[in-house]
Length: 70
Image 1 (tube, helix red, strand yellow):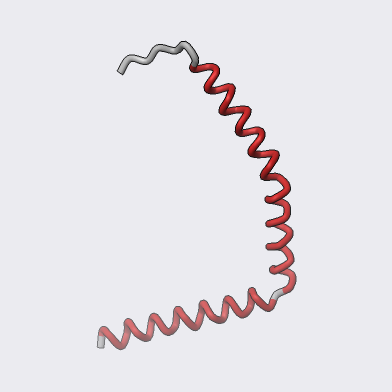
Image 2 (cartoon, rainbow, N blue to C red; image 1 turned 120 degrees about the horizontal axis):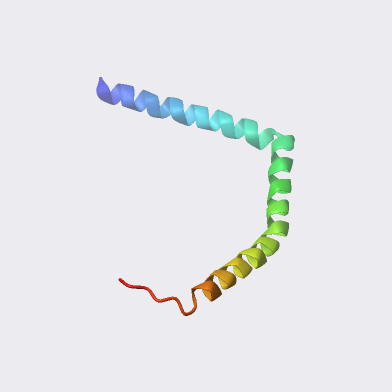
């Protein structure tokens, strides 16, 4: 009986996932929004990398000459 219940739960999850993927895959609005988000991330990524590099450099410079006792 436990195996039957477990198998049934797995089948129900698979059906739900399949239905969800069908809905998302068929929705042009969702697909377009995902593509727009990816483009926006790609555009902003280089700026973000530059800013983070600058922060890391300033942090490293502030630690120069600092003595640490362990």
